[in-house]
Length: 415
Image (cartoon, rainbow, N blue to C red; front, side, top):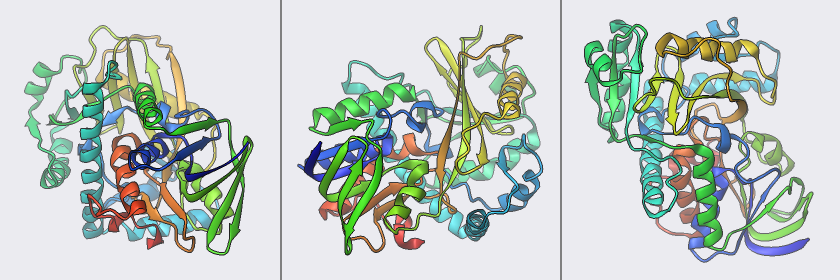
């Protein structure tokens, strides 16, 4: 196979497909090449949350000292594998530089806006499609186990409220009355009524169908393994399913972006952060809405006929092994809050690598030093909830339109 198109998108996850859709809507002939199946990686196994309320950069004020302590605790919410690595040292230095409050809040404002606009897209897609892909706009309930942690969490609720995400504060008594699925110790909650959730694999399928209807061509099983440059331009991409030429190239390869970009001489200072999702059979009392167990950093997402638990981050770069203690920690944390049967055998255990840049913001825009290469990567844990607006912003930049939101926080050349 050999072809020439207007745009070649390398990477068929939710970000790449969203970008392809927006470009096709603007008249471009677009091909997406994917090493596996469309949407087979984190687009398949994420928490399914469409929640601007928790679309915040990982590099938060006060987190770095905790992260150093977590180095020695393999069951901690953010585990950093102790090892000598120059890449890890540089990443941690960049992470530390991004934690001052002013920089964090600027990044939070940008991510929240990206998420709000994306959730609007998902809601519209659900309304006009025959299959709502499990979309439910029943809000997000952020649950705290003690009055002190509830009080400490108010600052973040007020922060996102400044950016257009309303919230309600619930007492422990109100929480027990309104969410009977909760059984553990409760100190209060914050309810974000405009948030939503869905089944991520079905949402990905609906997005891909939309893109295909707009004329996007998908080539699965096509792993990019060689790039040919002529000066500042990429002129050919060789894959395991043929060679491709295009006027513009979009790199949307998630946690593999560092390695793929390096083939082109482009620096993407990314680490893979491994997270887990467990699919459980339905429990006797299913949650009425999506939950975030804030003290334990676990997301609980109810679907038709199953319950999804998601959590933990391990900065491991490219390690795909299953850490038994992480799976046990998620189950134990959920059991502390919900009435789960014992013994409990998950229907599915999934793990994947979230593409994480030091400042917690994605790269969206033209790659430094390469005139026809564009980046859409580094969305940490926010890929599903920010993909549609990412695709639109990238398409606007590529076609010379006035951007619908400020692209400056996401500039690839900030590194």
